[in-house]
Length: 205
Image 1 (cartoon, rainbow, N blue to C red):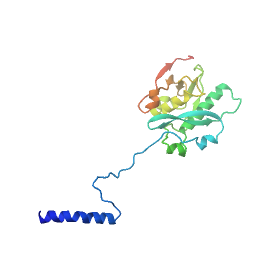
Image 2: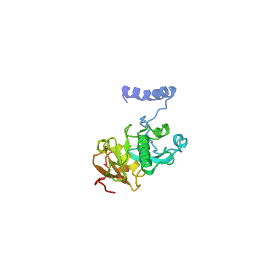
Image 3: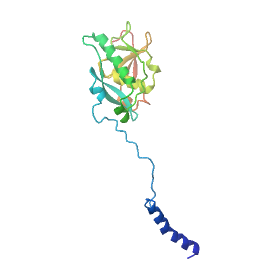
Image 4: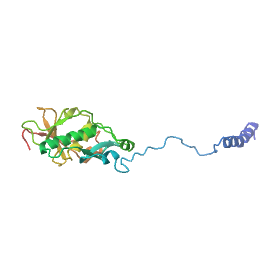
């Protein structure tokens, strides 16, 4: 055995002693000290305090989590005795406001976000529009795809529409109207899927 190899073998026990003295256990297995994988549950442990303390009409809105749309509970305030037509618009506006609001701390911890811009307004049908029309202050075509998916899925399953899985949307009158649908594909891949739409003729119901 050469002197150089002998010195190398003698140095191994000394290195182990030094590591042990520093509180580090010597190991022959490579260790990866990378960050632990992130686990986002996309579900809340219990009812959010924000919804527990609110009073109003119970609704659900679609927020983004893990690149999919997930429902969360909200409430919308509507005065008693409000006529049905006005009630639809108030519910729709309340839903838009809830979609644009920053998620609660518990929701953010669970991974929920929203892409719906603030100050988005909605009104009822213009003359000759179908009675279930909702006209947005911003044309739907100008909204980001995820925001449009959130709006369509939230409105199409609410008291603001016929709750048949679709919603008639348009920009300010007299811009054209389209009936948008919320499909499973839209809910699962809102960033890469445009809600299916069909043209609505004037006065159609």
